[in-house]
Length: 400
Length: 91
Image 1 (cartoon, rainbow over the protein chains, first blue to last red):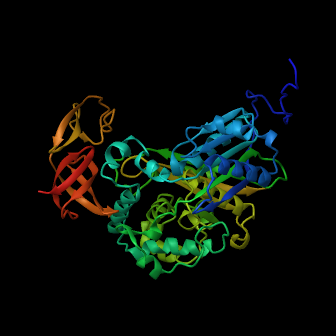
Image 2 (image 1 turned 180 degrees about the horizontal axis):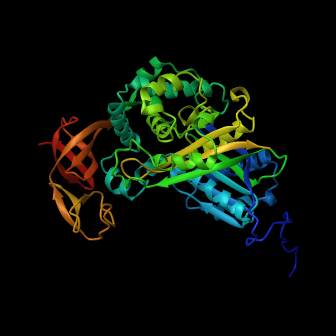
Image 3 (image 1 turned 135 degrees about the vertical axis):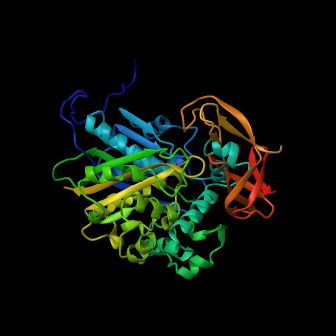
């Protein structure tokens, strides 16, 4: 055989899988490829994910050859899968997974990556999420999100999830006695944070009047209740926690899938079924959180998730909006959230993780929450038929 | 076609739509097709010129349907199937 033979790159020593000692995992870095409402010709999903990969290695100060785990969430990577991406990135892996469950995929990947590192089966796991929607791509995704959508919703045509969440919002309004001006508080407040995020696609100020005057999308939802679709990608790197190395520990992560069999009204998520366990495992509670990144595909879902997690005293959503959310006093979705920063497809669930990690590492510049040590991040998605079937939440704390 | 096919669980008699593989209420796997002709629109919205209603059919089924005509929240509607799309119209 001629030519130089391929050699296994050198790796740090690791304990065998059967080792009794459990490793301690931490998130060492996070990165986002700038979102783009109108991506230039030639943009591809694979290239965006590769950009996110390179950026997160730099953020975490890890070499490409040290990466031995890869998780990916992307709607538009098909027909490629994680292994094809590994090949394009030139990395050799011991652990790999893919998650197609939309807004809940990032935290699902994170949960499994933490287990992999803690069990010693992988040392440096990169989690990527991103999408580029070319002409027609978003429409195809919206019509073929799952079988129930293809067979029973696309023929209507519902035209994507706006109609479902308009109906959820109507129910929520009636349940809690809210008006459109109450929901407006979320996009308006988040926009004040977006003004301080150079990566947000919408940064100019948004007033209540702007919100109410915007074109109707699906009553009662208007333009500013719906996320702008962008092209972009996000990444985090999960590794072993090292002494004197700044990182973010995941104190607890809980998920819930198909909690109500689609027999409920969509006014609760599975987070309510895991909240008590989450706070117990995290060792802190809602009052100890310095910032929250709550999955904001629609303002109503932010309110529902915060209520499910115990942030809303006595279930009084109306008072909670006025006392906690109005203005930018409480750090909620400090990137501007998906409502202002944009939703890059399957990166939607990773966006909040990246923001929370960067806040806890003190890397968010003008919008830095001073002294932030503890955060929660949620994901919500996997719209099965009437509403989302999946929800997850992570309690994060800075270390090192 | 008039009416919409929903799935009646042979064991507990409750209905599902869209079809499930296992009854969420009792765990039975055997369903009979049943024609549902009527329901009540509980909420109505619209998107890109298409009226869309949340329709309650009996005690068990909540479905999304295209609205045909002046359907409002609270309207009693008749149901039909238009090539996979449930359609709700005023009786």
